[in-house]
Image (cartoon, rainbow, N blue to C red):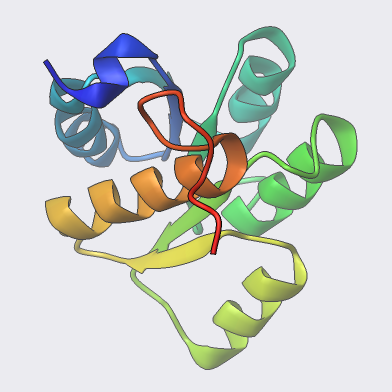
Length: 140
């Protein structure tokens, strides 16, 4: 039993590519996370308004709203503290600077690595909510 299964966290996976959504779901669900799926920024906004979401994995390039625009709306309309992770095949310096200004937790390059995704999700949870086992973050 993983530590996260004792305290389930929800990860919202937003990508207009169904295969990419499924790939990310296959990474997080075996680790005990509850995966919520959205195919657009608009759908992601609806989900974060209606469901408890702990971390957002957001594709950058989607029709209508980009991942960055969606993250900005999530932070404005729902919660500035919700950790949002941008996933992109186009991790340029300019995009990374824009993401940091928008309070994106991290930018993960595509193609995604299972280990990078899990490491980043766990770090985002620890930073926002304490240790995955329910304890508080270690004091330094």
